[in-house]
Image (cartoon, rainbow, N blue to C red; front, side):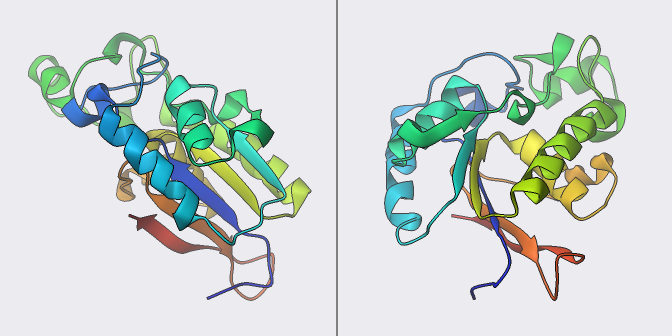
Length: 193
């Protein structure tokens, strides 16, 4: 179903060893696995026939490599605000390991010591949304799961903590857009594999 309004295509990066094992990967540059590279290469056919006014990528190696393997690397603009959540002291640690030392912890509610809170990530997402709305064009974005989940929540006007309600698989494609007019932001498609 096409829309007469701008659409924002969100692509989560391909699989890494840390995404596969559930380790929080914020600012560490972990390369794509062979499976992650193969899935990223298939994005070319999945995005075939679509036209984008701009391509934006997180500065992470995994997002930039996914973008390049999808065929969009040469025109991509790196945007620092698209970086994944800064997990601080929880970088490289699984949720299970965190819960062993901090029972009941939830990323979207509690944030990370020496890292970001949901409000911090939400402020970056708001800056991206302001830039997207100023462009008023169809744009392709490559980034990471938790940041994109907060971006989707903020797109809808929800608090950043509500990003917890959205799940994204590696190399999934999601589409943000509008319904009847530009005052009605919606999620048009989510987590397509």
